[in-house]
Length: 416
Image 1 (tube, rainbow, N blue to C red):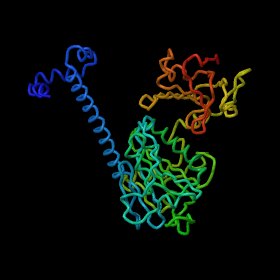
Image 2: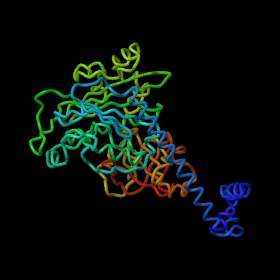
Image 3: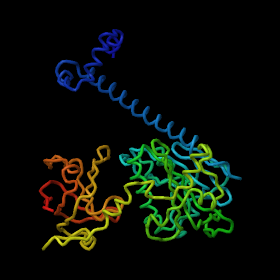
Image 4: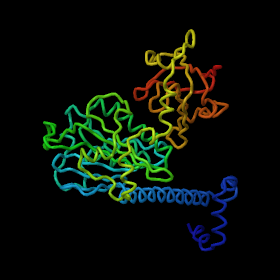
């Protein structure tokens, strides 16, 4: 320790040693020249600097999101609401119905690279100082505890994803809707985020008097009959917005059939959304209900999805047949239509989707980071737009068929 103190008391020597610590090419110096305890000191110093930089970036990100929500996302005041602000979302809580009037959050562009897992720690919101719904109201109710701001939208922050499980962000939601069409809508919005800097999203139930209640528990939580989601791209050169309205029951995804204007949601809820926007911009955005204007690639995506499944010959199946062979070793063939390498993920996975793009994928070829060394090419780049066959065991992940490829020997590239 006395040796380190002497070094730190000599600024020029200290700066020189820190420079050496930061140079990867001088790792041998740590082993053979610099004493071990000094090497450890350097490593610890660099680690601490990196850690501080990481937390500083995350802190600045949260501050940016909070500022954007405060300046753009919060609706005009609602009678009897309780407004609660958390790290990455703000909720307008309805104490009469025990559910939120709406929840507003921001999806950052790098959301798909987040690796934080669901915390599943459903709990009362500590910022609500009156009795509110809790797990006993939902347990065995027949309804899912449906997130308004999707937990997967916060995978970039443990604090943010944990706070998404407060009951100020939860409503009773039909199980099939929550895990089906609604989940696919949330995945589509995250996919849209890739093509935009970030998106402001407002989600909530249509609250009316005489809504049915969950009969159990202490608080008779209201069960909404409709749920909406509003998406705003607030960045130039093209400001745009779109809204969706789904009944709280099992319905097909059919995204185009659920598109509505923000104006219509305001009429149903009595809520004035985005009051801080300039009137000229607000009037245009809130009247918008053209999905193809919001996503110019969507129509082409739909066209690309319309194709006739091919017969690839003996002992080969196409992606429309793959669900019949779960758990079996087989050869699956199709055209690569979308790819993604999650370099910052926990296992650095590569996703190769055949015939239909995410989130409507029929089959996914998975390559995990530790297996990329077994490929002579980058799978996400080399395989794009090629027709391929993959041999392996067909498994499922969240209900979607997949094969995990450990090497390129499992993949055959076909001539179109």
